[in-house]
Amino acid sequence: MNVPLLGPMTLTGFAHSWWFLFLLVIVGLIALYIVVQLARQRRVLRFANMELLESVAPQRPNRWRHLPAILLVASLLLFTIAMAGPTRDVRIPRNRAVVMLVIDVSQSMRATDVAPSRLAAAQDAAKQFADELTPGINLGLIAYAGTATVLVSPTTNRDTTKVAIDKLQLADRTATGEGIFTALQAIATVGAVIGGGDEPPPARIVLLSDGKETVPSNPNNPKGAYTAARTAKDQGVPISTISFGTPYGYVEINDQRQPVPVDDEMLKKIAELSGGEAYNAGTLSELRNVYSTLQQQIGYETIKGDASAGWLRLGSLVLACAALAALLINRRLPT
Image (tube, rainbow, N blue to C red; front, side, top):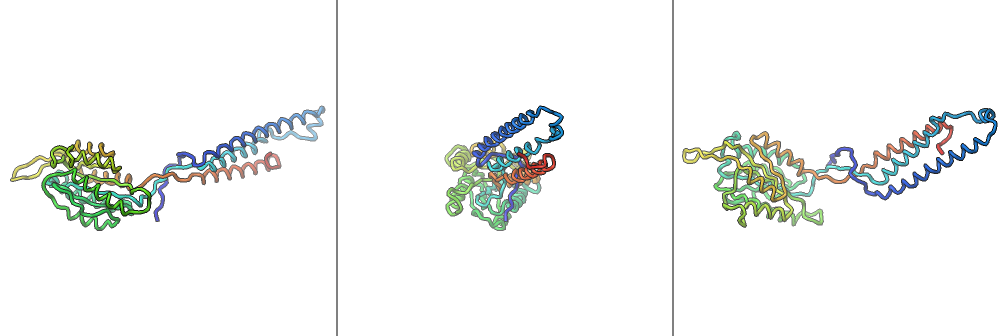
């Protein structure tokens, strides 16, 4: 059973604001009370002999005699707020959503600037992300280098995803655009079969890479990364990008060091074009923190929850205090 996560006790609106028209009734009651008190005072002043007045009607504690009426009005105000349907933000786990985890497995991921290697660290953090992601979300996995392959179609079976993550293999070149297009196709396919709503389920792509696209050379080509990001934007699928690595990474090619510095700019542009957010991580710990942040963003949604119970309880308490004050001070209920 999913337990809602309650946000701060702050009001975000009212579901039935027309109930505030009852404030006019409260204003009318206040006016009536004042009229009654003035009329009572005029009747008292008709006694010419003030000594006789004091003997037949001893002076009451004027400082407190209006307190019951004030408390009664306060309780009516609280009840009015409660009936107006105050709402607050409530975070609840998503049960109908799709997340595609897209991981770069190009040769630059062999770099050991992130111990034990970029790919090994990425696998470790990705498995933790799969474990912590809200159970009801459908998680899929795509690996890409020169081509993109769907290793796991979106599913709630996390064991399948983790087994596939362990089996990731390095390959040549980097076709980021193809990885995104393949993810969009997987989202569209599973969205057509997931029920529970009139619209397709919300979806997100989480793209991890350490470098720029090499195939095609121009990311604005029809199959390029920027074109794919714009397509994702059109389909309402934001891309959260993670640039993973440091500026000092290198790989050994033919006994020579080939620098493979992390490329933040392309991934930032992909996130911007798709309506998503860009992150960067230079260590395994930082990558885990990024995934934890994404889990909180993706795994939960914020809805309007009812916040009237507290106002009803407070109104009832104040009303009880009004009755008690009336009996103790005026020896009768407030009028």
